[in-house]
Length: 239
Image (spheres, rainbow, N blue to C red):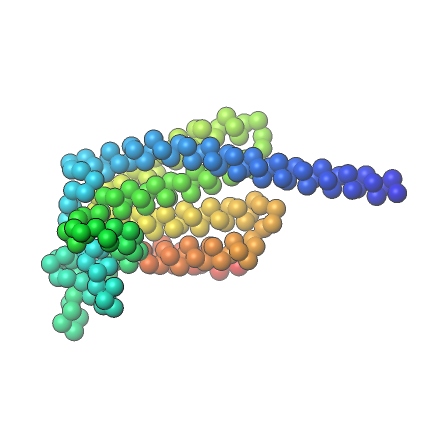
């Protein structure tokens, strides 16, 4: 009976420790996202150099046109919007870009001047913000799981490095090419975050988590095929 009582107490203590760790991880993730607010402003400033948030860029209306064509059940684009980046097939011009940036523009479809407004810079900003958010959550989850005295001190340095370097800065250029790459990177960052949650979490890779990982990989396929194939291979290995 004594051994059973001690085991039960140990079990309760372990459960409390897991719950405490989960709460701290959630709180740490929310705190990490606070860093995203000034970062988004900084990214916006970089993207608006040489023009405003809706300033036109080269071939910047191609995803607007792509969305309008998709809503009519067509997969071609206007030759005037895609320019020399288009491919002629059976009398119609097609783009090799994925449709994810076009789907993002569904939010702005009710605008009366939607067809003539360039959302490329805004799309880049939304994608880089999403990518950065998942990277912050990933770093915070790892730091909380480590649970040493050094982790709280090093976490701000890790977050600062994420915000001020890497893909968030290297590829931050307003163009349709970079917008596609940024959306793919955002999907990849979400995938990595889910992997870290499954790897470090007590529940492991649950069916719900695996579905979320598959969704992130599938969504990436609508942006950039090469990045998506890497996620597909990673998902298969983890499965």
